[in-house]
Length: 410
Image: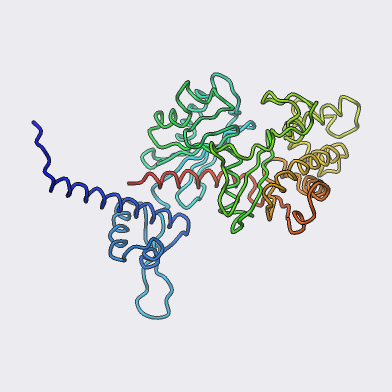
């Protein structure tokens, strides 16, 4: 039997709800602050989140009891009692990061301090085959078991992948077999592994990694070009990663650069992907070899001649490899010139497999920018190879995952 709730009780419930909401909000603020700044004293935290010291003390004591945070020593002060310093715990909670790409899949386990505790790469290549979802879940299960991670401590999973990835709803609209009908990949993995799962486009993940830990740190206007199976572009505007209305912003690889060019995998003709991706690089070399060009690559299996082997040959002085990389860099620079005129960046960061080519790729990119950009756009512009390499993508996926997780903390 139910009874009517009095107006006084309604007011009490409403006030309690507001108090609980504010407390949850402050809990999230504290966790986010510690994740982004590493350590804080209670007084520093109170100033950072604009709350009272007693309130922050109470919340941090709760978070310590829940094993989210730990004390890590005392702060240095000129006088008086040294305050305790707190950080996120690196002992209990774990996240899984899955880098799903066309060359293989890398599975990693990290702690909340972004330290890689386990890493394994398996021969699961991203494609749109009907069995890709089943094979992915099997691979993840196997890697979790091999890592020795206590499943109770695994609090979230992040997946980075190529394609048009809706990071809000979890759908991949390029590799549609990763979704299960009307159910997104992220929702499916969430139900399968019973933990929150978040998905992000590989270029966006790389850009986030560069922003937090790499060459884009502290910069407000950045272009990060990610050259792998395709050509992606990460954009940082006013210090924030620009995603667009659906998270698809930056598909530089699908601007048309050759009106009567090759058919792109997207269905259109003459996309930048067809002449400036890692896949197109291998096709160019294969075609040149078939036409009789002399190269150390002619002794290799044509089917196994990928971007990495071509780059290695270039570093060994192979003229064919150097020529195709130069041509590719010029095309990339030409495409980038459009983005440079649109966004006026202070730095262009080159990421992905082709970044291993170093100056073989950056020199022609700079030449093309000098040729196709207005002088005032390029006078202070730098073009640099990522110092993080593939770790930019892994760390970016980790940041995206942890921050999404913290946003859901009650």
